[in-house]
Amino acid sequence: MAFACRPSDELILVVGTHFTHRHPFTPFDEAPPREADSFVAMPIPEAILPQVVGENFRHRLGTFALDLSDWLPKDSETSLTIDLKRKLLKSRRPEVVAVLPGGEQCAEEAAQLVGRWAGVDIKSSGIEALVEASLLVADDLAVLQPVKQSGGDEQLLLTSAVVCCPSRWVLAEKMGRDMMQVHAPVAKYAEHLGAAVDNYFQRIAVDKPVWRSNWIIQDHPALFQPRIPASPLVDNPNDLWIRMERQTLRRLPRTGGVLFTIRGFQQPLPEYLARSKTIAQNIRTLLERLPADVAQYKSVLHYLPQIVPWINQYC
Ligand code: HEM
Image (cartoon, rainbow, N blue to C red):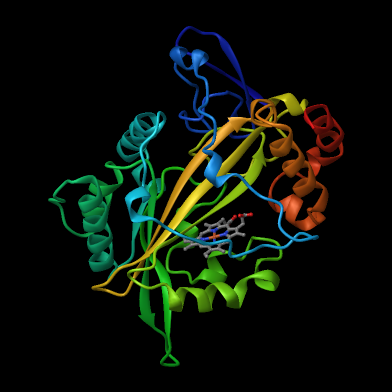
């Protein structure tokens, strides 16, 4: 545990590398500006909230057909997210941009698709095109490229990306990896999804884009949060946040790659639970069903004994 100073010399608590602050648009290890004190999070969009499916926990593909007119929608947090991206691209570019040799063509094709969506002509080339496109939307952009393997078969590998809102993973560690390798830290991924995701990717057609969403409970709201804290950051469930991602997948017609977009949302957990009894009951059920290893992966294991009874007041 350590202390750091704002310009005003006010002391702020730092736990490990995480600054304890409540501003999603300030990186996890930086102090927010004064005006961040008045920040109120937007409610996470209703359409992506987690639903209870089946009787037991299971990771699911959970994909739905995507209406392209609703591909990368704007909302009241879009400009804050783009400002965060601009700042990270300037000050911490190696943490948020990556490309492997040979990944440039797919990156450009993905960038042009986003540019067309935003009504902007992308001027740059290679990875710079993807950086340019990333500033037109709130979403992060990750591009998978079909690459011939030594055995002759083709695998989709992550070869270019601009990711400013990673939820406790490091972009550089995922580059050049296939889906199974990217998801190696995800408890029960190989068992529940592994081959299903690989097969699914072969079937993503140009004219059949899809979306899916995920959720996680976190003890820090920073959207730019590549690192897992060394130890729990809060004592009270009132200080937890719920974080969700809306993800989309589109096949790139020219290169055969796949563009994966990720939009991060977060809301203080008490505000989220207070939205409705059904919302609170769903989260309670999902938490009750989480196996310990998945709860550990979702960084919620430590808080579980406290949270489940605490949620009852919202049900
Ligand atoms: C249908 C496609 C996909 C499915 C079903 C899927 C599923 C999952 C699941 C279940 C998790 C654990 C978090 C959670 O509970 O949701 C996860 C994490 C993750 N996914 Fe995916 N995913 C898909 C596509 C992708 C793609 C295309 C990428 C490309 C970069 C990706 C990158 C990641 C990363 C980086 C993590 C965090 C891994 C870590 O903690 O190190 N996913 N995914």
